[in-house]
Length: 150
Image 1 (tube, rainbow, N blue to C red):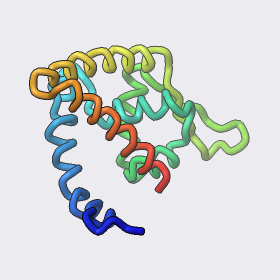
Image 2: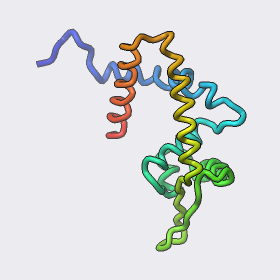
Image 3: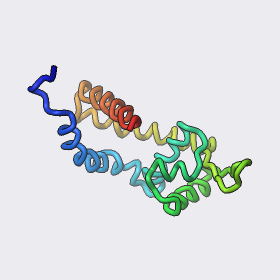
Image 4: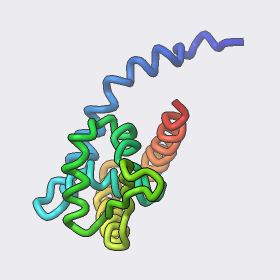
């Protein structure tokens, strides 16, 4: 039995779909951490984080995951290789396949970024209650878990 006081989830999802991207861009990707001249762009940290989570991935798989054409993801990988954060490894069974793996230096850089990110997020406590922080954390976890199913 449906509770008629609640809006249809499809309508709610549709309404919030257009609000999510600008809010994430405003509050996450524009954090000073990702705008530093010495730092890497957010997209580079996202790639490092994915490799840290999943291990080695092919350039094609990375391209598909981030919905970025291979020619456009190559410069990102080039920079990470040049910075000593990832390495390219050709497949032994199919030389056309190039896998990308995170190096210990990449894991260390990612750890440093997580520490700095935690510091910046801690600054949100002066604007959000502990309850709001807990709700935001749970909502982000739920959001990611559900979207990964799609």
